[in-house]
Image (cartoon, rainbow, N blue to C red; front, side, top):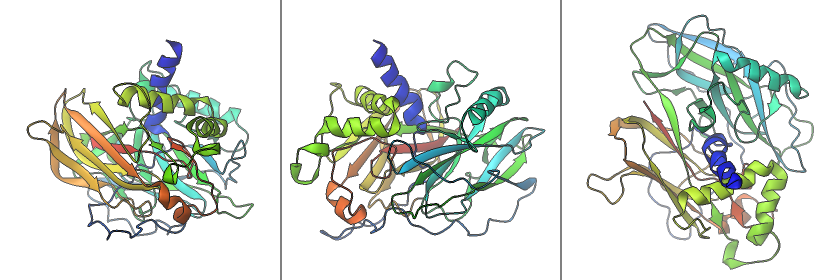
Length: 396
């Protein structure tokens, strides 16, 4: 049973934060005409998030934090991707709500996405130990931050430490829904997890990431938010059913493990166990997973994340039951235009409700969006040339 526990744990902890760009969906749009590609021609080039922030509201303030110095990414194991975690201190001496953030990379040509995590005061020593143990600023952190947490259940907390993110399309400040915020305790610090991809980058580039935080006093009458993550498997065969080499599932899976470590393999296995009734992979362009709501509350906003082969993502509440509704439908999905989507008004969810995430990928787009990258059987993976299927639910 040990491998099963590791696999399920990897899904709850690793998948919950594995390189998943949280600022990630657009309002539904009309489908493109048949035969028209909606995928961009480049891998991840995009404009810097430089749109001005909204004016401060009563009781708010801005705080800027950044890495100490520029960091030159150095992807391990012959890959083109590195996830780097930087510990930063917002200097909180009293409780505060995070009500908005604007991620500021200095080199957008190599930044795939970034996620901001809150580190409770009790876990700051563990984060500092990780920083000291790795050469250079920060530490390599495929999957989550690597911080075990002082709470025994923290590794299975489903992404509640995730408080903000930036991905292509997020060119300005990302505010929390009106009347809400993420509560930070005094002495808490933050981790900026930055996914660097050097697939198209010239040698010798670096980046000094930073973020502008919009903060409000913790005494404000705001609804405290948390993030719930809804992963589903990715089992995308090569175009035309081609086989051989990395078009066979086993070699492709071992290549992901080689690049990102054994937890990457446990994530793939765990997703299959959690999401498939028979526990067996189901190759195909569309994958889905049902997630049971355990804590009642309200959904305020949603997002979805895939990589360059994604074409559509949906999140449904209680599909097939009375009162079922679609909370998110991004069709066509565009990796280069990713934004979170607030709901017109909060939607209540009850314990026992089901949230279903469904993703569709198109392997034939590889030659357009990843020119020169050999075809492969695609499973869940941290790299830009791999894929993901992730629904992101912002709720109380």
